[in-house]
Amino acid sequence: MTEWRALRRGESARERKVLLERAHERFLDDETLSRDPELRRDFATRSALREVVLDSWLRSRHRTVSPDAPPGGLALSDDELAELQRIHPIVRMLPVVNRLLLEEASESGFLVAIGDATGRLLWIDGDRRLRGKAEDIGFAVGTDWSEESVGTSAPGAALSLDHSIQVLGAEHYNRAVHHWSCTAAPVHDPLTGAIIGVIDVTGDDGAASPHILPLVEATLAAVEAELKLEALRGQIAGARSGGGAPSAATAEHRSPRIAAPRLLVLGRETAQLETDRGPLPVSGRHAEILLALAASPNGVNAAALADRVYGADASELTLRPELVRLRRWLAQSGTGLELRSRPYRLSGPLRSDATDVMEALGRGAHRVALAAYEGAALPTSLSPAAEDLRHEVDATLREAMLQSAAPEVLFEYANRWAADDAQVWETLLQTLPALSPKRARVVAKLEAIARVDDPAGPITH
Image (cartoon, rainbow, N blue to C red):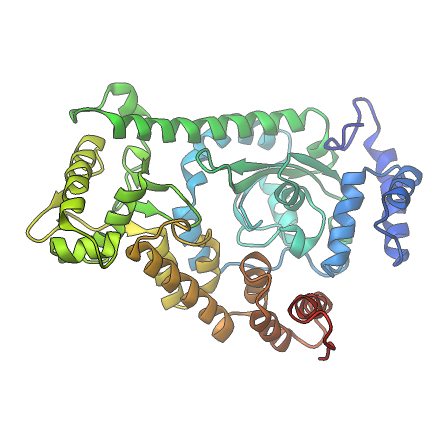
């Protein structure tokens, strides 16, 4: 059997589910099951269990996920959900998903769900009767279906393994989901290769049948191809030697109009500008100039701009050729922005994903801020404009998490962005409820940090 498929062609789902129920109970009863490869293979063979599922069960146990707690805890408020739906890049790909997957899924009695890179479900559509039943087990928009939250499921496993996968019945770690099956695949950013979301089909046994996996993978291929085409159209627009009206084909495939151009710098060595013509890659120096200009909407003189881009010893003579090239690029790429002078400024507002994070933190929307944060701003840039922004965003996010984030948000922050930050883990230990199953993992993490900091020292709590 292929590790990623739940069933062989012609295999009875009902008979296999009986074997899986027995394997699940044996696993939960065996608290000493070792990670030793030989023993793991022996358990999988005796239980007729895929090793990829057993590995996920082991990860779920290590993360102290409860197999009996209600799955899919609410991760997003209505306002946070609306904001993430607005800014997530997959929103532009929903027509592709609807055309290739939703119609067939609805006719077959399935649900189609789309989540972000952390496993939060942003859109669910399909069979309306089934949707109500799914909500009864916590499978609803705004909920968290990451492996860290609910254990083994197709959306969570696909994100953890970066691979399409099916999960049948009792292969789910949580007992409440044993009557459900699902198939999911991760979606990637065409420029960075990073996971940006997940596409999932959920329903009865048929949602993990052999023909569903290639259907989901074909939809994934179409979505990623469209994202890549969108990026290429942006590159072509940016490389044009002159402006002028776009072709009919280009106009037909444009992204929906956006309120203002948006510069993406978080977790990216190469920035990207979101415009009406789609995403445009931005060269390193141009991204640094745009950051400096965006921070001074009323304008800045040449000396001050050179200082923000190059550093204290910069020369205006070095800056001016770059400004000429940037002015030409903005005009030829159809960004909707112009570079004006005396003082140097942009013709309109320029948003960035970094300022989106800061604004979300400012209004206390910690979940939105954490979801929008993809890493340090232009991490390899030495420009003062980038370095200052990088420090400001990272420090503000950390402080907000420490001071006022809910325990589950702080737990996510600690795992994703503060793996070795003892203060964050100490604060998390103090914040978690006394009976939280996550406390064991936090204590283990603090002990590991202590061993690294002081290999010979005692460990106390």
